[in-house]
Image (cartoon, rainbow, N blue to C red; front, top):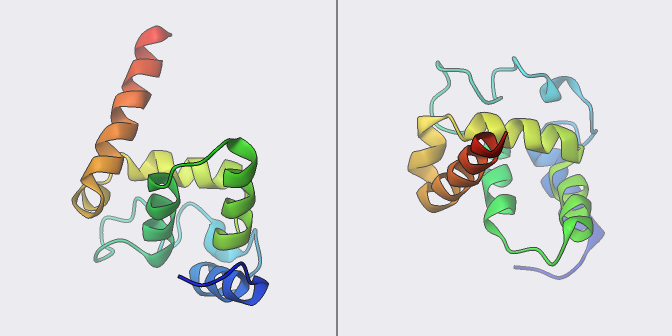
Length: 114
């Protein structure tokens, strides 16, 4: 997959965010590539990348948050907003059923404890 190079992560962030800048116009909830747009065909590259990050195993929150910022070019808060919306998206379920079903179970268990 490639070594720990900054250029590889930067190009990935630019590709996923469109500008390479966190907080850009494509971070809005209502954008054409964002989650929740029923007219969009398939998942956006950013949505697929969010599911890919979530499917990995992480030793703790620090490395995961660092990877979110470097690879996706978004804040961890925005990442979890996108991820939560993806859990209700049938296209996300079709793309990564194991990950989405696992996260749905975790979310449902947390809601039941409240």
